[in-house]
Length: 97
Image (cartoon, rainbow, N blue to C red):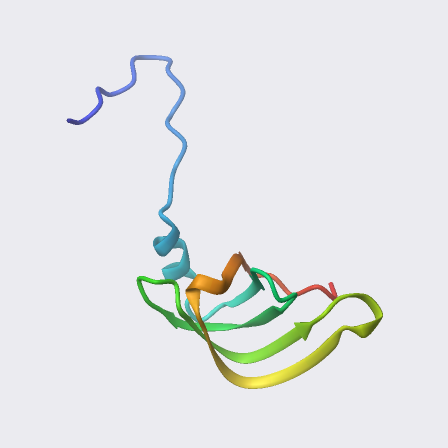
């Protein structure tokens, strides 16, 4: 059932976007990925993803650990398991910014 259109003077409905639609718009762009439990954060170019939010990133910088012991690694390409991803920040530049 379709809701009725708003009456005169009513505020316009806020635009909405589905999660996979947002990810699709980010293909070819930089994304900052925060993993669930191991303290890893990654920034790279999103090349693709699937319905399970598994992601392929190119030109990746990975940060492991916290504080003084934080380790930074450069990777050409990586595949991330969607079940381990906590957050994706479109256009993010990572924890050093």
